[in-house]
Length: 327
Ligand SMILES: [Zn+2]
Ligand SMILES: [Zn+2]
Image (tube, rainbow, N blue to C red; front, top):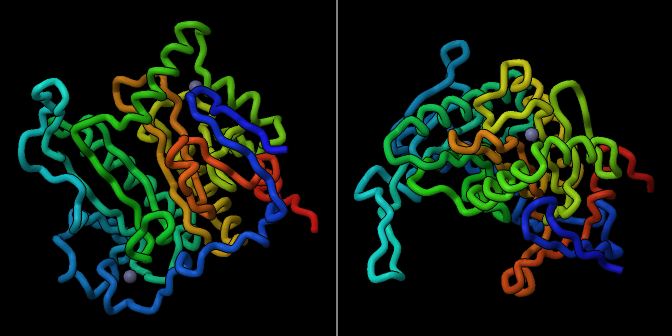
């Protein structure tokens, strides 16, 4: 029997519908997701193709060669032009310029490396670049939120196979963070504690537990929307990745390497990696990192009802991450 489950806090339901195809090896990503990596000469992010970029914002160098690069997104969703103020005309028409900065973090000069193939030190460098971009862009006028995410594979929205992340700083707060902040705030008013701190305590010993050390807890969320969805929480109550200290950030780099490498057993699946950050007005929020493999297509049911069908039980996904799959 399928089960309807609600998100811990949000009014968001999923249907957990484990079918016969619940073993990981039976789930094959679409052929186009493990994109072919045979076109270095045409790749915008490869060394030697700088003429294809719209400039270079910054570089992290090692032995005089760049190892991480921040570049403007050539087809940015936002730009520093127009009027950033949000206005409403005639009651129903709310608008503003799509104002802000859209950047790409090229994580490595090597075309055929995935994030998890890089050294822990290098991944730490990518995380430090996230932190630095968030701090710098957040300080700009009219910026309400700095969104950091990574899409891997066409199914997850990546148009270029060369490993990269994206940063979008813009003039509105995304609806999901506004909703989460509201729910967390209400919870704290009623219970005088952070709901995520409580959820971490429950999940670290549940069937959905994946990993725990002194800094982090990882688990597959109760109402996982995606097969093998994984959440990684710092134990320390911080609202934004910029508040993690060096030891925590370095540890997070090792966990990313560990779990993304584990995901490769599913055939290098497409995934979205999302930072759940709150800005300065969200001190009650609890930062976490979400990894959502995109192995299932959403159809009319998902789009029409907003209720997502997930064919992999989170409890089974947790066993996969813990290395407890038995044939
Ligand atoms: Zn490339
Ligand atoms: Zn907390």
